[in-house]
Length: 113
Length: 114
Image 1 (cartoon, one colour):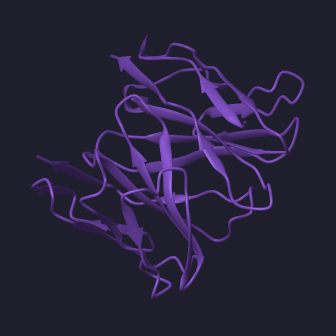
Image 2 (image 1 turned 30 degrees about the vertical axis):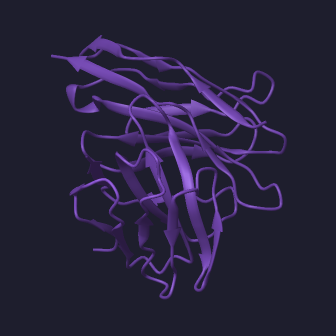
């Protein structure tokens, strides 16, 4: 079945370090791919999305490229800040005659000053 | 400001009691969803609704019930039949259930049943 696998956390980085959070997926159709972010005690917010192969989503210095050949959607940021500390969820959504959105387990990021 | 409100933020109940979680949106979205989040896990879909007076079960609907009498409101009832109800509950909405549309989330309700 459809699924999303993302790297386990927590990931701990120093401020200004480079961030990569890996995400791979399996899907029967042609999914849209999303990264959501959850700050402590809050709901999820959309960070970025890509709806077709080779699309690059970007927002707030984060970016991810929809790679159909490797079924991946890795999240990257060149220089993290303390304020980026949060849980990041990779998700896919696919039309299969009905609604289906599947979330990964989440990766917690800690950024140290 | 448009958005989704969930109330209360924290809710405590005794085992065997039904409890209703509120979700209201003023985004004029057609679709609304309820998810359950447990520590270290992703979100799991409980119920969703694409239109007023219609809703469908998600992956873990047992022990839960919903209603959609108004476009803005999608309350979730956690019944005494839900074996492990303690969790963080998230409500979301979207303009459409098409796969390219993102979901907008409320701040969540943390339910503790003892």
